[in-house]
Length: 90
View 1 (cartoon, rainbow, N blue to C red):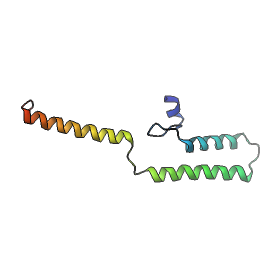
View 2: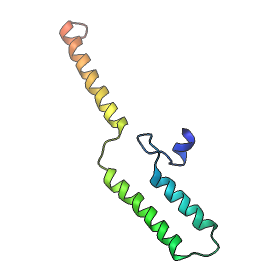
View 3: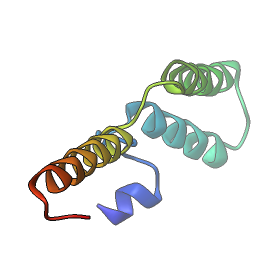
View 4: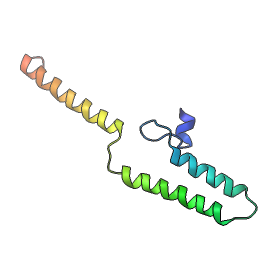
């Protein structure tokens, strides 16, 4: 799991990121090619375009970790209120 995270093969939600894999594969293919052809450059631009579009669309969506953190904070506040009502907390 750490290796997948290091190479950015999984996204923030722990799902396999096909866009990141496509970018890595195309860059590896271009680095091994002796000469660049139009189709290889077009593939790179397509992969990077998809990657950028995915980042643009998902930039305002909260990740699962942020949602969990917010939920934990709400629960802690409710528990604190209950402790005050029951007299456990002064």
